[in-house]
Length: 401
Image (cartoon, rainbow, N blue to C red):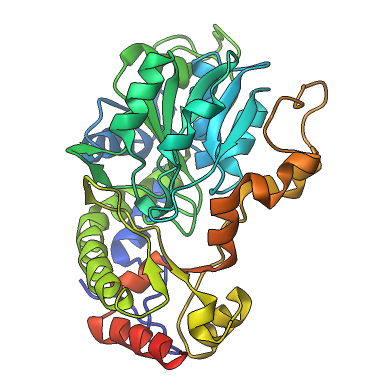
């Protein structure tokens, strides 16, 4: 498969599409079935088929398509009856949605620092964050890199907690024989514009419990039941359904994904080996037991003292000026204004959280604060470039010493 190259810097553009996506969208338009309907009264075919195809690819029994990855997390929490006063442990190094979805359910996120090598939730810090109010843990597989889920499961089982995997970066990732999303009670995915499988917007939930799948479906489709009447609403729900246009795109993107996934994994190892040979550069280390990685982003951590005390901003500017693409790192959650200044929901007690006001100082989250200050990230499509282009990244970083 050939990839379109950007003429400015010869790195692949994203998203990658061809006549298959165009024909799929055209087919939806011509069908006049622009939405999926209901299980008992299906209109379009793409939503229902994508759910089956994605579940099969992720090796899960059930998949529920939704309009984005944020509401995917919210929907699982709601189906599990996580709500007022409950606490949910979340990685401090993630997009705001991992925590804002918890806020949406009237629960309270508790932030966990990260491992300095793998850049994902530090399992050794979890037990110190558990209280009598804790109901769930949301491990975030940053860059597709799995959290140590076998160890996390032991902790969760001992404390009777749910694990909801945030797999927004981890399509296709595999840890110790299982695809991401199958270790916990459910896994959530995003298909937002920059994701490694994309339809501009979209999301999905996978799980292996039929009862939970039914509860999630009811919540995302206005409280309906799978084979109930269109105007029978059995419980509180909302409308988070995915549309036919997005599902049609996702089906074609999913077809392209395995080849892209293989290339990303091969090129990530190639690039990582060369970058790690440069004094002062450390590539994100895969968690032991990782067999495949989604590589939504490709983070590297640098030692400023090895590069003339260069700042993160200056490092990025130099790379970009030389035609090497980068993406912005997520600011740690504890630094975000909404959490630091507690600009959240009225009537909810956030006083027991481990963030907010004086608790949001970097000293309380030392690892993620340090990593954020001296790391940069390449977008996943960089890994689809030729090895010659990857070599040019290595050589340019060497030249900065």
